[in-house]
Image (tube, rainbow, N blue to C red; front, side, top):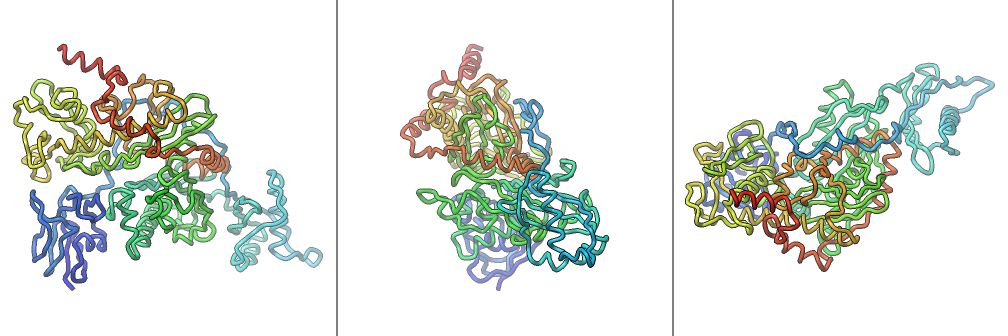
Length: 635
């Protein structure tokens, strides 16, 4: 079998005859951009053959599509810099225009009362007069403690294997012990027994499993503190940038198990990393609280995802049982429980439910619009009286997908742009202040807003043909703006923004805005009635509010109504770890949400078509943008 060596990772893997380089990369754990999941249509998976012979489809700008490239001999493949994944970019500081929800209001408040609890007991040792067996002796004492808390139970459930260690634990500290109890209906469940008083050693983990990133926090269940936090890219991105690509990949034999193991191994690694930082053994974790979209939740449990994307879009389940951690191979063993936030529909998942709970929308009177912008943008509108939700198929443009020089937000990605109104020359900022490799979502929005405001493009997103400027030219894919010349880029090639890129972005923002209008209309409301707009997710944290309104991605409302909450999914998962009441609130919120299928709404397409302009066909919906444009025309 031929061997393929990948540079700069310097990883070598053997591949069977006829296997593509992209499959070899997946096997080797080497990331190559592949927005289409290896279907051969995105052109993102460019690689260069440094040594050896291969057959494949060449790209006009040089290199080959990795999804078509098959080795004829041993190969040395160079993966270009735009495919590199560097988790340091996830830790960059947030710069915002909107007010921080957490600074202004704080997260929703729930009592520190986890669904698991440790009880310290001092039992009477057995004697000839009191020779009750070991477990009934412990059970009687625990039921008495639970009764003091209002938990009326007649018995305790437990894993029979716990009985093997029980007599030794009881006698190690003269019948002084700590018992961990899971307050599950209908009977409490005894999870663990430890000799002596171990109540202070009580830890949990909160997890946000995103399509692109995975975020994990180590929690102290005694103090209610976050001890440490880390994040990394979801390793499943090597199998498709978006959930649809991954669902399609999962149809292949053995692929679902690969996707499941990728995310589980990532969680194990991140939990072990946090434990090492704080001297906490991963096996001492008692609770793992997870929030993720419906597709990610299915992948995590290895559930069949294919029917999520086929009409009528039915998931296997939207409610998940508590699972012993060892059944998923996660830290904590049989004594730890894994909780997954409940979902609502195929594309409105536990991450949104967790976020709504974290924001406290369902417990307050003001009418709120909760927005999580991404490949599958989710929106929720409501208050304490009702909640309505929907998903918008925005596509991958906000994460750099479908954009010629687009990339995810990693080191070297252009994240902010300013264009001089006189010279039309750009000023750019990159993540990590590195040489530019491409442009990420926040930079794409920034660039589009600047091009529009400076009159380089018209309302339909077309470059003005009458402007004579070296950066505005007709390229291989039509008219484009050269943002970075090749001599200044990390790739050695021009970084450009094409009319096709603009069209993709306009369609993405149009889907989001049409979603707001349609969902609000479905419940008899209009956009101007919204009292609060809450922006969630990592992308929302780096979004420039004025620029997002300028292009028509966000409604033109008074700016004091906008808030950003950051990773609301992780925040909700943390609340669920700390409080059984937050878990119940998630269940209540999920049941409270009415899901609307936008594509089935008769007015959605009309709203969508109207939104395919900058900022909108009806400029009166954007009064501040209208005023700004009028002022610039006058000057």
